[in-house]
Amino acid sequence: MTDVTGAPADVLHTLFRSDQGGHEQVVLCQDRASGLKAVIAIHSTAVGPALGGTRFYPYATEAEAVADALNLARGMSYKNAMAGLDHGGGKAVIIGDPDRIKTEELLLAYGRFVASLGGRYVTACDVGTYVADMDVVARECRWTTGRSPEHGGAGDSSVLTALGVYQGMRASAQHLWGDPSLRGRRVGIAGVGKVGHHLVAHLRAEGAEVFVTDVREQAVRRVAERHPDVTAVADTDTLIRVEGLDIYAPCALGGALNDHSVPVLTARVVCGAANNQLAHPGVEKDLADRGILYAPDYVVNAGGVIQVADELHGFDFDRCRAKAARIYDTTLAIFARAKEDGIPPAAAADRIAEQRMAEARAARGW
Image (cartoon, rainbow, N blue to C red):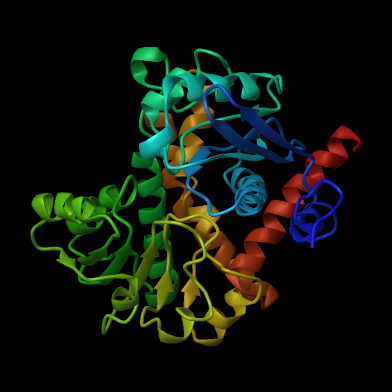
């Protein structure tokens, strides 16, 4: 079923009528000369200009791309609110295989579309885009972060994203086992790309036993070369069934926690870098019913957005690192609120973020 524009009706229902909607603006972008097809979704600017990365991915359909942009943008509103940033949430997706169609012309065209929003949306890196890409986008758009130090930016934000996830794991261990140390804990990481391989380094430095998997063999090889004592497994289905697993870290694409994975997950804690890990509403309760502690994804993976937001005001790595380290305290506060209210941690985090956004709207008279 489609609406009068030809767009699938379920996408428009999400945008205008679903509890997952409420977005302020969605922009469809096309540049035939370069082959650019992109979606920019702005969920909220109540707290400040929308901030979120650009995902470059070969979506099966345009509707899937729009839906992903909507979900990711909404998640950024909550992430930025929980991180204490003066930014709302936005996200962009570029449709296509970046290995095949990414060109300088396409990135410049994309930069012009972002610039046309006049600062309502600030972009950065995400899956399929890198620091070098943001340097190109910035030639057309001053509302671009995640640039290289040579071009006035902060560089790779995955370093602090990994630090934040690591701190979330430490907070989870403190809450569940009464000790933040991860020494001797068995940790499984699904996805050892941008963020995951930095996370491996933190865990091995503390003495955790680490298992990894990735759809890209070269990513696993890179980890094995640097950390030969890490165990590689065939796939995510194998990883989530590892006997005695303490912590599972989804660090690839979203939807990792679903009706298939949750019933067989051996880990006592889920804490990873991937966005939108809960495949659908209700999964957070399924985790709680199984006694699995879930560290909300948008809380623990906020280190990267903390870094790119700081870039807008004159980047200072030590200042950003200190903010990312405080994800430990934020995660503990969420677990405490969840216990107090008798709700899953994901719901507790949502309540805290929604309160901050509501207060910002009230202050602006919206």
